[in-house]
Length: 325
Image 1 (spheres, helix red, strand yellow):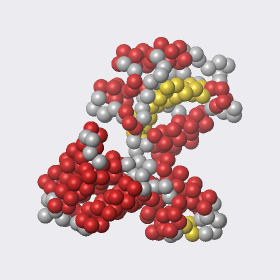
Image 2 (cartoon, one colour; image 1 turned 180 degrees about the vertical axis):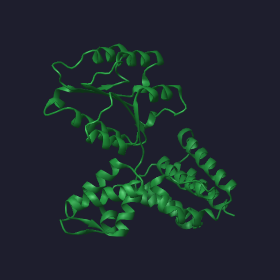
Image 3 (tube, helix red, strand yellow; image 1 turned 90 degrees about the vertical axis):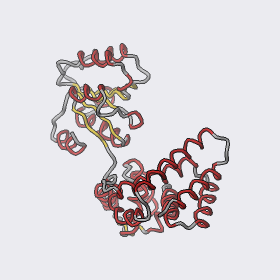
Image 4 (cartoon, one colour; image 1 turned 60 degrees about the horizontal axis):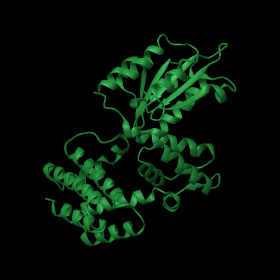
């Protein structure tokens, strides 16, 4: 089941007894969890009949005890269990035995945070996928992000110029939570009837430093050594974490590698395919593989070696620029 299918079925009053939410977007999972609870629980029942349980802190016996308490007098109940992957296989079986047969007056939402998402080939996922309505929450595609931004701005009488819209989509990188935060700041910054400009986004978006890092990656590809070294020093002086800079450099070169190999980019980056394709032309596929390996090795060195991050980063970008064909 996709998030869109979940929205359609729930909004029409159709509910599954047990859901399993997983994926890379924690914000969207929490948002969907609240939506299901609000639609399933009438009036004020959400205040007393919506329970959240942390799977990492709750023993299986305590979870089973909670699930053994059925709604009374026909009332509805929603129980959300986070970090469900924390339970052992036998404990998972115990939980599902208790949930069978399903109670039409209760909805159980099991979930796994993005940092601990199980592989779809794992025994855990295969088991839970067959016993629940599994919903994967991924990052927003570019079109979804654009639609979300325009829709929220329109509600308060604002619009964004095309370049500002593109920059905001790029900064938030398909992250729904980040998108909500940045839109909220822009809404508070502008008056109804005004147009949001690139300058507005640059002035108040916390994620604008991400854009600076993106520019750093493009400067590395361009081979401008003096500029690249100056940008690294500035970004570190501004408080950017060295491992964070490496992460975005890695993402950039992974995108070049995917484009070079004719493979699809992540949905939110597909509109940049032409830009990446031009840059990828400066490298052979083997060179890109080597660069990605070098970035990973530098990340490891940052975590275990007592060398100044600036030195490791400068050495890395110089090797990367030397790798161009």
